[in-house]
Image (cartoon, rainbow, N blue to C red; front, side, top):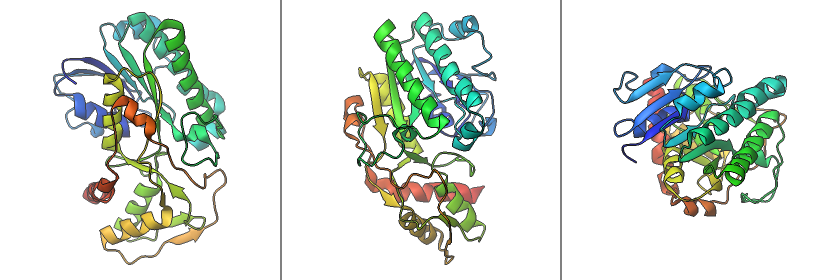
Length: 312
C-alpha cells in the first residue's frame, strides 16, 4: 500500500501502533487517539514527516470536524475502543458510548467524506460460549459481556452502512492477539504477557482453572497484514483473524518456560467466572481478503515477543 491517506483510530495502542509502523514510510497517516490506553512511546518516530497525531476522543469530536478530518482519506482503520470486559460489566453505558456511539459517528463521517473503505477491529468475544468449533463467521452472535455486545453491535452497523449507503466495510474478528508492546494488563490474550512478565521477574505465573482451556493465538504483525489485505480487497463483510490452530494454556506455558530457560512451575487457581473454555476459529474466510497465517512461525513469533519483554 503506497501513496494513500490513512486514518488510524487508536493508533497509539498495541495493534494500532503496529499498523502505523507498517504504513508510515509510504503513506500519509493521521492518528486519532485519546491516550486512554495508547502511548506515544509505542511509536518509533512520533515526529515522522508523514504523521499527524490528533489527541482527541471520538466521542467528543463533532461530526462536522470528524468529516473534515476524513476528507480525501482513502482508508480508515478503526481500532479505538474501550477494550475491557470487566470495565464494560462495571459500566456498560460508558462501554456503549466509547464503542458503539463512537463507531456510528465514525461510519457517518466516513460516508459523508466518501472514504474508500473502513476496516473495523472486532473480537472473537462476539461468539461467547458457542461450542461449535471451529467457529465460523455465520455462527449466531452470543455475547456474554457488554464489551462483546458492543463489538457485535458495531459489526451490524458496519454492515448496515454498506447496505444503506454503499460504504465499504470489513469487520475483522481478532482471536487471541499477542506480540511486542502488549500491555501486561491488556484484554488481548493477556495470558502471554502475564506469563512472560512473571517468569522474566523469576515469579511463578498464575493459571486459572486446570490449564486445559484452549486458545487460538495470532501474532500482531499478522493482524496488521490482515488489516491491509482487507483494505485492498474487494470484500465486504466479516472475517475471522486467527491461526486456525488451538493450543492449551498449559502447552503455552511450557513453550514460554522453555524459551526463557525457567524451571518455575505455575500456580493453579480457581477458574474465573466468565472465562471461555475453548476458542478456535474457522479461517476459510481469510482467503476472501487474500490473506493467510503461517502457523509454523508461532514459536519464532513467541521468541520475538519474549525478547521484547526482556528488553523492557
